Image (cartoon, rainbow over all chains, first blue to last red; front, side, top):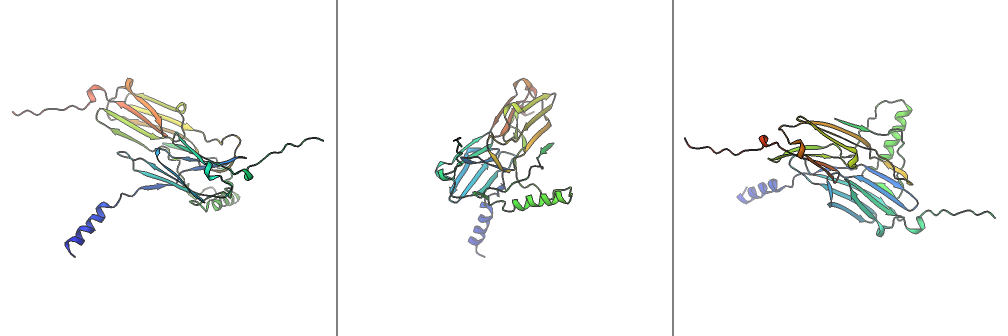
Length: 120
Length: 160
């Protein structure tokens, strides 16, 4: 083994990124006439460390819980499969108190319309 | 000490077709299994709960002049946190109730209600009057300034 091979082998082991613990966040899914609502627990995740990606038909939540002196870094990930009823362009998300709420509006034809029945 | 409550009576319903959860495609089988367990009077739920509310993880840091406590409490609002100090004991009590938003039907319910209660014995004296607490990003952070005689001091070693 040449010197350079040894060197590169050593570099690989040193530079290997520390393994990040992956967690599956607890999720609630709700639905009403107009939309689906996904709620996820993401403590220690900030708006800046949260990624919400829609790559049709997948929607991926990826939140990095920032490490501190004694707490390891966590990665909360979860992927959902969206069908055509979701209006992808109108998805809205908000993060507060460590809880993420993703509103997924349904496209017009899939929204429930209640029709009032009139008496003759 | 951690108490978790989960409403096991509520049957986990099938996810809507528009939201298939790829990370737990067997969830529906899990609920089928629960039904069977109940049917045969099985006491234990042997499938461990794989989802994380992430609550209760905590740490105390010593920054030199102060102690900093951080506890993960997702979805807990300010009014549901109780914090008290007596002597060198620090108590934190917090809870949240998982409720479905009004007007929505529930397809999946993993986020459990919880009660968190913990006491810490502080390693140094703190100035209880100057303790500050804040709740952000689902994390309760308590800053406890050390009392003057517990502050670090630099002692110069003089040559004899």
